[in-house]
Amino acid sequence: MKNKGLFSLFVLLLALNSCVLKTEDKADVTSSEELETTITRFDRPDASILKGVHIPSDKEYFYTSGLVADVINPNVEAGTYERYGNTYQQSISTLEKIKATLKEADFEMKDVFFLRVYLAPNQEGEVDWQAWFDAYGEYFNNDENPNKVARSTIAVYALANPDLLIEIEAVAAK
Image (cartoon, rainbow, N blue to C red; front, side, top):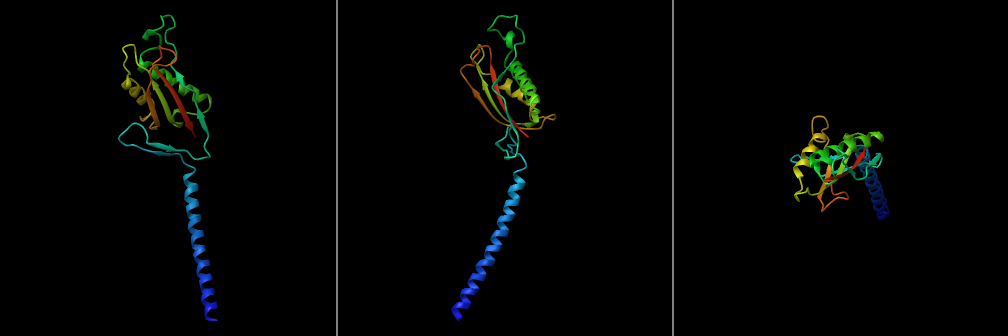
């Protein structure tokens, strides 16, 4: 009889322990659900870009193709900066094109969470990183749009059109 009583006590303790575990699991699910409703940006306070971004599964996404600058002067000969502009001018043109493309899909620049940027060397063989960084700063991580993005900036040998110095892909979520 003593063994039966100990066994019953053991089963009762096990059942109570299971209830506690279930309550803790439920609390974890609630926290997880709360996290799943908010886009989480993992900041790098010392940089103008993020370490990463978590996008919950209930968010709507928009991807652009690789976009490039518009011709600013079609009357000049190909192969000159006057046709598309320098790296800074092309960066601004491309960011404006991204802004317009996002608007068509009912997104905004503040919804952008990732950029992939391809920079090609100019006619002197130099990649103008600073021109791109300056243009980026006019659209992100500023007073008008404090949003930082996760970003990859890659130097490439050339783009499809040798007059082009930058191509940008954007990903947005809301």
